Image 1 (tube, helix red, strand yellow):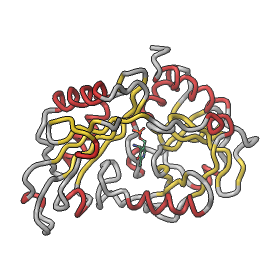
Image 2 (tube, protein in one colour; image 1 turned 180 degrees about the vertical axis):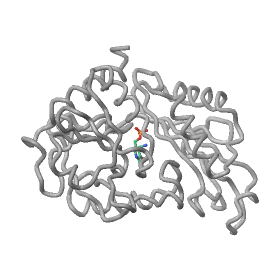
Image 3 (spheres, helix red, strand yellow; image 1 turned 30 degrees about the horizontal axis):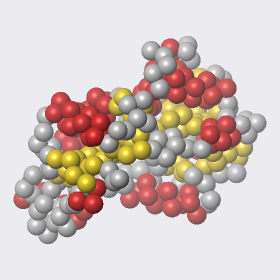
Image 4 (tube, helix red, strand yellow; image 1 turned 45 degrees about the horizontal axis):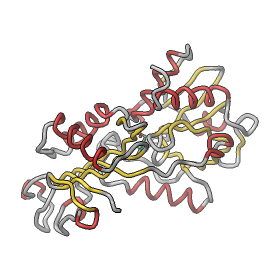
Length: 288
Ligand code: PMP
């Protein structure tokens, strides 16, 4: 049996969930989205994700046309209708149907889509062995272009960086900003550890303000580990004692090699493993 997709105010069979070829989400990448996890039938950090969605939309002057509370309810409804226990939600808001010109204000109304599906979990070995990454040539947007904090339907910088990773035979690439400072990975935030202190780029360095990033920073604080937001360079990545990524899909995963440089002993570090476990327990509701 296929999924039930929420579109235009109702739940329809996935085969009937269709949008117009005149939708500006398709024609111009004009829209915003969120990727959200469901753990044990509970939506993880829904309010934080919705807040980011509405903030992204505000920057693009995209009127979602639905109150945040109502969108939360419809998202819950979609998860229930599909009996999702451990899964993934994709919330998409496009500018809607317009003409072939750029003018977004000629579009009738925003198109909201909610997809709730089961999740393909990352293999266990990935967490035990860590991942190898490269640094990408493709940079994040200049802050005067689409702000990098906006989770828009235009992911082409990240897609080009992802292609660089695939060409190099690795799962992820770390991207820099226009000043040469570390921003983030193509779909995850980046952290380093040195002398027992955790460092991560400030959001202004061109990263998305990851929900997982925020939770992991809070957990690290509770664990008594100092977290500092600071600009990082390629040098800082190469000489890190530990490196790890955080994201909705990946959760917390260690990096063990970058651009041919091994990190520490080539295994995920102690702090990475500790945070990975704490995050897992928190997400699965086994701790506060
Ligand atoms: N950066 C980018 C570019 C992303 O797409 C994501 C995934 N949404 C992240 C970081 C991690 O953010 P989050 O923890 O909210 O999934």
